[in-house]
Length: 163
Image (cartoon, rainbow, N blue to C red; front, side):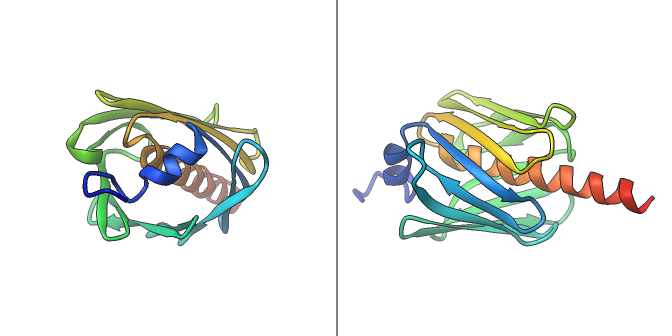
């Protein structure tokens, strides 16, 4: 890693702007390259966050007071986010402001910023997701969108089945 590279830059290049996720949202997901090889895991840690392990690197998503989150990738802040559980989120990966939109009924999320974009789409039951990303901060944003989309949908489903 060169001094200007981010901790996720190498993995981002290897993935070529795409990855897939398979698993059960309350527990987490196995992450796959487009050729089907597994490259990591995203473990859900309840409403408090998630932990990513991938290709000799790791990241965490931490919930802060209110509707705020931070993603730390090897102790480097990859992004911070705030906003309502669905609808638009303001994210600041690498100092850029991105806007995102979670569409729970469609099981999809998108984000756009000056330096790229990210899109995550899942199947109806939320066990399979495909992600695309562009730009230097696209990979952390796509992984954060996967976490938020899966966690919000899981919570909504659990509330409906209990209610």
